[in-house]
Length: 395
Ligand code: C5P
Image (spheres, protein in one colour):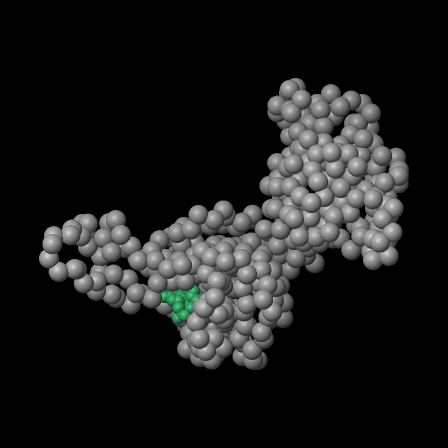
C-alpha cells in the first residue's frame, strides 16, 4: 500500500479529484488530502474526508495540526505528492518557490516525488507564462501530465482538461517506486463471487457471496504491482484498476478458467463456489399440477484442492473458509485437507456476506493469527502485503 498526499487546487475539475480518491482507495492506497483556499470553493473538506477516510488539511496556521503533525512531515510521510487539479496559479507559485499557503509550503518542503495533473482553460494552458512554468517544473523534476483535450466547462475547446481519474491513477502507479510494488513481475490468480448452477435454462442455484472481498483482494494485489487475473462469478461489481477479469457462471467454468490462467506465482481463492450442481434440464421445467420436481445434485470439482495438488501448483495457495461455527477448527482441518498454504477463515454467521466489514483468522502451518474486525478493503490490503512478503521470502 502506498501513501498518497493529494493537493486539491481551485478549479471546477476538483470534483474529479473526488473520483480519483475513490479509485486510489479501491486500489489499496491510503490518501491524505490538502485542500487549497481556491479548492474549497469547489469541494468541501467534508467530501474529501469522507472519501479518503482521513483528516483533511487546509491551512498552514492550524496549530493543532502543527502539534500533531508538522506540515513538513505531512509531505515527507507520503510516497508521492499528487496535485490534482493543478491550476495555472498553483503551478506558477510552485515554479517560483512560493510558500504562502499549506499546499505550496508542503511542495517546497518535500523530498517526495511530485506529480501534477493540470486543469485550466485552454488559453491559460497555452499561454507562454504557463508553458514556461510547466517547463520549469519539469526541469525541477516534477512530473506534469499532459492535460486532456476536449470541451471545457467554460465552453471552449482544446487542451486543458484534467486527465480522467483512471489515467491519473495509472500515472501515479507508474511513478511509485519498486518498494511500493513488491509484486511487480508476479502473476496472481484470484477467484471471487458466487457461482450460478443452472436448474434449467431460466433458473439457477446461487449463494449470498457479493464478491466484494475477492474484488478487494484483486485490487490490493494489483496495487502492489502484481499482474492479477480475477476469475469472477456473476456479480456486477466494477473491475478493480489494473486487473484482468474473466467472467464465469458455473463452478465448472471457474475450474476451467483457473486452469487456463496458470501458471501463477500465487492463487487466492475467495470465491464461494457451489459445492453441488444440478443435473440441469434442457428445457424449462413446467409446473404441470403433479408432484414437485426433485433436483438431483452432483458434486462440483473442488477448484482449490485440484489446484493445490496439480503439477502447476502456484508457490502460494490461499483459500478462504466461510463458516458459521467452529470457525478456526474447521479452517485448520480445511487447510490440511485441501493442501492450501493458508486459509483465511471468516465467521459468516453475522452480516459478512454482502457487508462492508470482515473479521478473519489467518491459518498457516505456523499457527493462527486473528485480525481485528476491519473493512474488507483493509483485509485485502493486509493480505496482499502478507502475500508479497511470503513470495519475497521464498525467492
Ligand atoms: O470447502 P469450502 O467450500 O468451505 O472451501 C472454501 C475454499 O475452497 C474457498 O477458498 C473456495 O474458493 C474453495 N473452493 C473451491 N472449489 C470448490 C469449493 C470451494 O475452490 N468447489
